[in-house]
Length: 359
Image 1 (cartoon, rainbow, N blue to C red):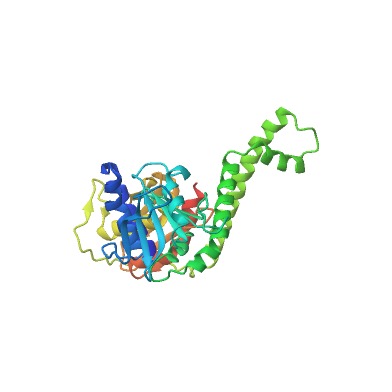
Image 2: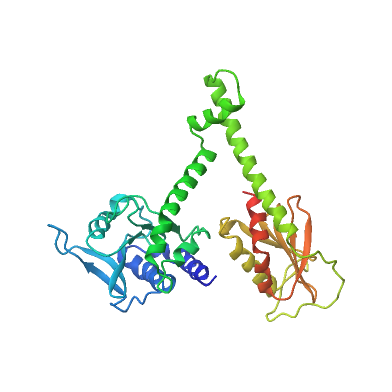
């Protein structure tokens, strides 16, 4: 969780500052150095750990510099090449990494623009950097499945053999996931033929192919929804037993003055804090800007797209016993008692699964 917290903190910083960053050097200072320091755990001000502007002559190329060389036990372990935030990253931007890779001891190289990090190694040929990364991290769209792999690159857990051994699987799984995503959203003709030939006995004319293009998209969408519903059912069955709400008149003590609107609805500080916790949980599966709330006299509702038909959860904080209301796949609410706001995190999987059903 600590590593994920650091990544989310850096993500928030990028959202706040990216628009004013105009140069590569500013990108390094604002985003890349904090990543090396806070996320990977290396002291950017200690040249025995991080060497900026690392020089390594290669053939006729003299005096070229790579942005950072990260060392451990006095040996170069990771090379980092930076571009300005917002610039696309492709293999052409990694030319210096390719040149330096085979003349150093480094087995890992990183190409980044401060937001997206692409991690490379030498799976395809020894001492030659692969053209495709084995791991990608987008700080504005953090995949929590990637976090454990990032942890292996940190100073305290760095194990190059473990990283390289896992890199092959990570690389191909990542590429397969991208292909699946592409085919589900915009299926290619071969993909459509694959399914059509197994369910349709007639000739695949142009009209039939057009029909099965639509049907394949529809089936893919429904299959994904079914998977999310199964996840919701599993989360619900493993949740704590539903407790009936006992009416109590005690009002939760607030540390700050509540906000009262024209209808007499009181929006309290604890409700706003709860909203931000829920938002932090689901920002990895939906755009944060889509997460809104509506306060009522009975409950504080958190919604997707400001739509009452897309409830994520409800906070019942207007009594001495706090409750969070969670929804099943039929949008039936079940309330669970919580003692402190941090207890909301124990329902994180259910909350994320609910949000995903609306995608």
